[in-house]
Image 1: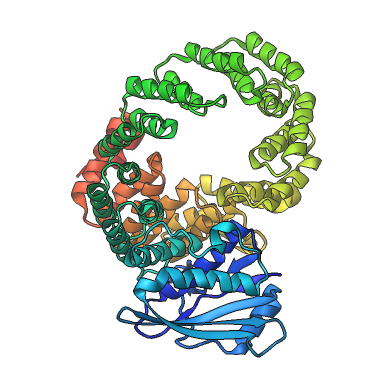
Image 2: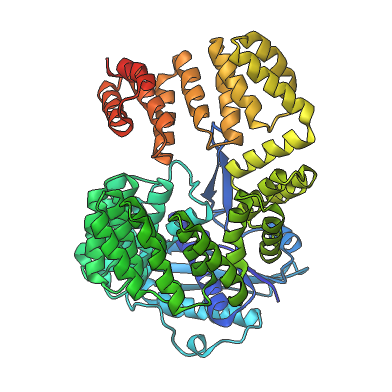
Length: 611
C-alpha cells in the first residue's frame, strides 16, 4: 500500500512548523524503522525573483481541513492508496489535533478524530499517531514502536518541541536547495535549537541539527555570519565536550576567508576527537592554505595512520609534498599503500602516475602493465592509463580502455569528455557527436554543458560556427560593426552557443552599446556561468549605464565564488573604484600586484585603480 502523509494545517496563532513536523514525524518513524512505503508531502510554493531565480517557500495551505477535491488530485497524481492529513491548533500549553484518513475513490474519511492534549502529553500523542498511521496503512510495527512507550531522545516536552521547530527550518533549506525566500531568517531556528539544548543538554538531536543548519546556511549564504557564529559559540558554552560546533565554526570562518580562525577551531575539534581522520584531514587542508606545509604534512600522515586501506588522505599528502618540491617522495606514499593492499586498483594507478610525473616513465608504465595483469578489477587502472596512452599517440588502445571504463560507468562525464577528445585526435570526428550527446544527457554541470554543446554545434552546424569565427576575426581587425552584422542574424539559430554571446557582449561594449552588451553578457552567464571574461563584459556594460552599485555587487559575488580568478578580481577592483569604494579597490590592486609580481600589461590598469 502506498501512503501519503500531508502536513497538518495550522490554525491561526499556531506555529506551522508543528503541523508539518507532527505529521512528518509519524511518517519518518515508519519509513525508518518499518521500511514502509510512506511519503511525507511538503507544501512548497515557487517564488520568482526579478532576476529570474526560482525560490521556494513553505506554505500553510489553510487554517482548516482540506476539501476532498484537493485530496482527490493527490490520489490521481501520486497514485497513492491512503492519505493522512489533519489540523493543529495551540492555545497556551493546550493542543487540539484533528487527524483523518482517506482511501482512494472514497470521498468520506474512513477515520477522523479530534483530540485535545497538554504539551506535557506530546510524547504519548505522537506515539499514538505513529500507531494509528501504521494500523490504517497495514504496517507491522517493530518492537521499538509497538510497545507502550517509544524513545524520543529526551523526556522534556518543550525541548522536543523546540527541536522540531529548528529541524523544520533545516528541512526547508534542504528541500529548497538553499533557494529560500528572501524574508526567511534562520535565527528563529538557532534560538529554538539552543533553547532545546539548554533544557536538556543530553538530548543529541538539537545539537546535531544546530551544527547542520549553521553549515547549510554558511554553504548557501543564508542569514548572517554573526548570527551563526553566536549560535555555535553558545552551543560550545552549553556543551563544551561536543565536537560538532568547533568543526562548524572552523568551516564557517573558512567560508569567509578567515583561515587563522578556521585553523584555531579545527585544532580544538581535533583535541576533542584526536582519532578522527576526517577532522585531522580538514585541519591539514586549512594549514596548506595558510602556507604551513610542515604542519599539514604531519596531520595528513597522522590521518593516514588512522584510515583504512583506502587512505583518502594520501591525495592531500601528495599535494603538500608537491608544493614543497618533493615530488620524488610521492611514489613512496602510493607504494606503501600498494604493498599493504595489492588489489587496490586506484592506489596502483596513482602509484604509476606519480612515477611518470616524477620523470620515471618506464617504471610508471611497468606498474600500469603489471597491475592490468594482477588486479582483479582493472577499471581504475584503465581509467588512469588511457590518457597516458592517448597523450603519446596510442589512440586505439586508449579508446579501448575508455570504452571498458564506460561499460562500467556509462555516464561518467570526465571519462566521456576525455574519450571524445581522443576520438577527435584519432581522426574519428564522426563518432564524437554521439559521445557529446551522452554527456548532455547525463545532467552535467552548466559549464560542462556549455562546452559540450558548443563542440556539438561546431561539428553538426559547421557553416554557422564558421560564420561566428569569421565575426571574431572581424573584431580582431577592429571591424565591430561588421562583426555585429554577421552575428545578429544567428542569435536565434545559435541561442545556446556561448561563443556567439561572448562575441556579442564584447562587440556591443566596444561600440558603447551598453544595454545590448548587458543583455548579451547575462545570456552568456546563463549558458556558461563559469566564463570569467563574461563577468568583465557585464561589469563594463553596467558601469557604462551608471549601474555602479549593481556592477560592484555582482563582482563581489563572482569573486566570492571564484577566489583564485585574477580577471574577476581585477574587475572587482574596477567595480569598487567606480562605486566609490576607494580603499577596497586599492587594497585589491595591492593584493594583485603581490600575487602576480611585475607585469607591464597589468600595470596600466592597476595604476588607474590606485589613483
